[in-house]
Amino acid sequence: MKKSLIFLLLVALALGQALSAWAQQRAPVKRPNILMIVADDMNWDSPGCFGGAAPEITPNIDGLAAAGMRFEHAYVNIAVCTPSRSVMLTGLYPHNNGAEGFQRIRPGTPTLPAILSEEGYFCGTVGKPLRQQDVFHWSVVYRWQGTGDENKWGRDPGQYRRFARSFFQMAAESQQPFFLMASSHDPHRPYGGGVSGDRHFERAASSRKYRPDEVKVPDFLPDLPDIRKEMAGYCTSTRRLDDMVGAILNELAEAGRVDDTIVVFLSDHGMSAPFAKTNCYVESTRTPLIVRWPGVVAANQVDRRHMISTVDLLPTLLEAVGLPSPDRQDGHSFLPLLKGGTQSGRDAVFAQFHHIHGRKPYPMRSVITRDHVYVFNAWSNGKRTYSAEPMAGLTYRAMKRAGEKDVRLSKRVHHLEYRTVEEFYDLKDDPFCLKNLAADRPAAMSAFQKQLRDWMVKYGDFALEAFDQRDSPAALEQFMKDYTERSGKEVEALKPYEEAKRYRF
Image (cartoon, rainbow, N blue to C red):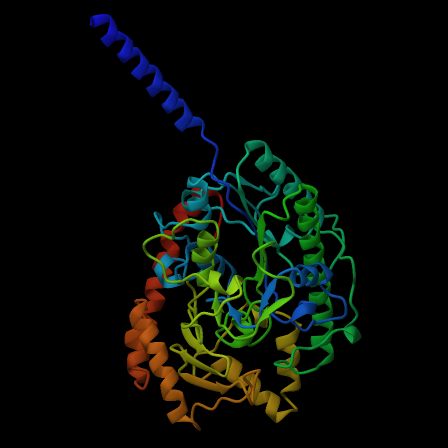
């Protein structure tokens, strides 16, 4: 009896060890890979497949669109780089993830790479620095050799090719599915330019250099010689972005991973020009979203109906690979659209702007539909002037000079600089938001005021009280005083973290 009991115990122990070994060594769940490519400061209509800012400007991006689905009404939620990417990777609006400006995502916030890493993905990033490792949990990060100015790197497609080749090889050897986020610095300023002799300057020549007479000036800007000159540099940089996209996609094909990889392409916001970047207009936030997923997304598809927001990217990608989203999410999956279906509740998107580094905040909110745009500018008081990076180039200065002789252009520049508390545009008659109808159509505007307020209540927007008192200059000034103080303190509190990490957001 004792021998039998001992035998059974030994069998149970051996079986337990075998089961334990199996549990430790079981093959990972087969899931699709994800490749996300994000352009920096590129307008939605710059790629050829969305209209094209110049001839043959984006052959690789156009080829990607031809093999998948592009969305005509996709938008980012905030038109500045760090907050925009933070929304993409958290599924939370800026005021809910902590990155209202160049700030860190709140510690403990679930992020796309951290969630995927926990589920067995090999996660990497190259290009625009996403260095908050405590929330991202990257498996591998590209490290630039220099220090300081990020405008000196990320402009050599060869660097992306080498990193992508190494990354795909490491993922294959680890036998893990992968997530790679490749963020270009093109076509962010400085535009154009070939190989630089400066130490650590990663800049290669674009495969095509454009002349001012070849480019298309966007319809929300006047056609002036200096604007054409700046657009030529911008288009040259956009072509170099496309070179980078081609390099990465070629390496993906060489690795034999095209068929099992979801490729997402988009821009973080609009171009660095007046009325685009760092604002809440259509040209500020509209993005050229493309998704290729062989076997799931049919080729040559165009969605012209649904409004897509980048706060939806995290839940969409997690559902696509069979994983649940975090409990707290501001976005919701648009996977049904990728599979050829329809989806209700996609008739509006919401955008925000707060500040850059806590200095001179310009809090704005907007609701955008296919036909209308409503904008709330809490900062506008008729005296405070708007100033931001898009006004540092040739375009703004050219507009300012030309406005000295052109009354209509002078009014346009004045509106850029001062705004009004409310703006309302009819996109059917005015697709480039040139004529503010807020004073002329209060009844039509009221429906959008309610829509924005409902959103602010639902998602806990701290600017709700200011919005409710938008007719009170004194209340708005108090809000601006309080918010300027708060945002400044938050950015100041980041300095010890930035110094410890040797990195400034």
